[in-house]
Image (cartoon, rainbow, N blue to C red; front, side):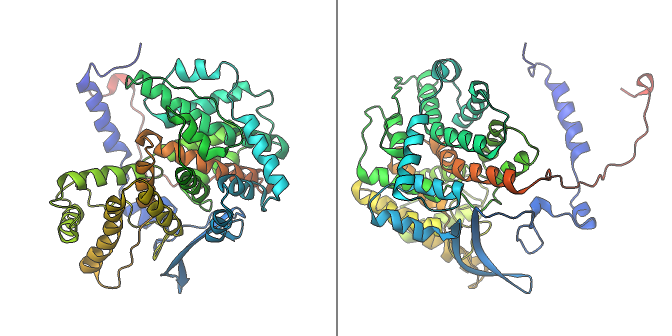
Length: 454
């Protein structure tokens, strides 16, 4: 029988004890020079590891001070803008090439890319009975929860799950990369049917169409999608495939992999990190904020009135009263987020197809007006730019992707980077990641049970 909250007073008391006994006063962080959130005083990340997988450049350091610059993102030393330009000019899919580059450290030849695609197609089906027993019989309201549990159950379907040789981990990585789209698509269908009362559609993955198109194929009742839709989702997945290793979920992959555990445990941990709203849920917040603006701003098509409403959001007067314009600003990027720049162009192309140019202009106006507002509030030198979540929120909405799939789609993209970082850890590192913590608890003496006060 599950523990409930029948005795609310008891639980309230326990919660109160936790809040009193677990709170650490900020002064201790300064006293012991603790880098909260692994951040230096100047806002830069604490250097804790080395990687060859990806690189994020959002500022320059001069005399230990952050100097803003245009953002750059590199996958294995290749600028993401050049990578995207390459596959877009040739009118072909890019996510699989990106995944290959991240995992193997070099661009594939045409023959190697075809072989890689063939392996992904061969691995997209789930093990026998898995869909019925794991997904349909145990549906979840949260698709990330379903994804994480499914990954751990795949351990039981692997004849060699604990072998962490490079060859075996590579095999597991390709299988996970192939299966993520199927799991999240079926997980969504089960959720929509059992919790939302919608018809159940289980479409088998289709060979030869790639990862992004399979997601559209498996999540839509009629399997239909346009070329622009496919290209847009493929671009989203390619630019989300990695972010340098210092992001929360990739760092967790390094941490968990450093102890020698199996691939399923390591990747499930990464999914757990991404599920948190501070990491993977920002584009959902963009969508929520946009809906609020459309419903409550006096006239969201009027720049002046939109600016007034955005100012009220910043002042914590309206919306969720947290004072944040979601989709604006980034922990690393300063002058620009290269992913946002790449996606913005494709988002406009999608807007033309969907007759949604006015709505696209709303996002564009939010970007421009938020920058104006912060310069007015904080000074003309204040640097702020849109991040990728602003336009991915627009793109997912125009693609008709349910908000329950926003973060799972992020996971289906980032699995490429997670696997690359896991393999890198296995190949390069031989030390378990174990940082130090200092105890700041007051001294206590043991008191016999009979002498403790009620």
